[in-house]
Image 1 (spheres, helix red, strand yellow):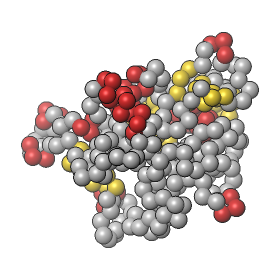
Image 2: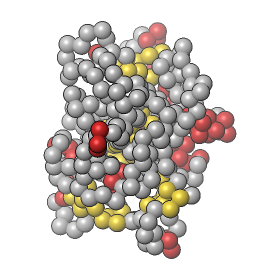
Image 3: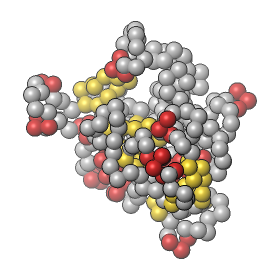
Length: 313
């Protein structure tokens, strides 16, 4: 883990998506954060120790889906699998499908596996799966404010976790999507799909994959107006924990948590949420093959204000 000093920063963005505005001042106490997203190797250790079964491995209860045909209720998860032709970029069902047998052990479906991918980020992780791992590891999931503070790496007002330019001096800095979305990722950054952690330079705090590769869960409920609520106060928001309840006007009955960082599917053609102040969202029981997580841990009370520079554990 990396030790992050506490501090005050300007959170959010006024330049991209409306749910990230307005920029507002936030203070966070110091904390430890995982250097990379949790990997398949680490998650396997957890499963071996606890017997945990992920949401994607559990057959849905018919009581939760009244009227559904029994043959339509099976264990699985969402996998990026675009149709040969895409006619409408507002219809994500053209490139996402719920695949029987897809889970963290079989990220692209039952015929796939994670052999040789021990250092890849674990995916198909629902919020409760991430929470269970964090509890077992003696950690917790980060608040959205902690996540963004760590992602900025000590920089102020920069669009990317590494600075001002998407490709400084022509160098790729994150695993994102190149080519015509969602039909063909050209892999110009050296990778197509999810790749191993720490393949690109770390940010100023020594953290890897704070942009691209896989989305990451935070502990905050999602509301598009939450930043407006915080900004309405004249004081600095200290250690904000997110809204008391979730609300997404596009799916008002779904319970969603904030996700951060973007993924290998992010592109300025569709979703450029590898930009550091931007936000994602996800229904708590749903995993995908571009969604993982990392954990944090509190500093001891007597050390929380002493860190001048990040240190490692």
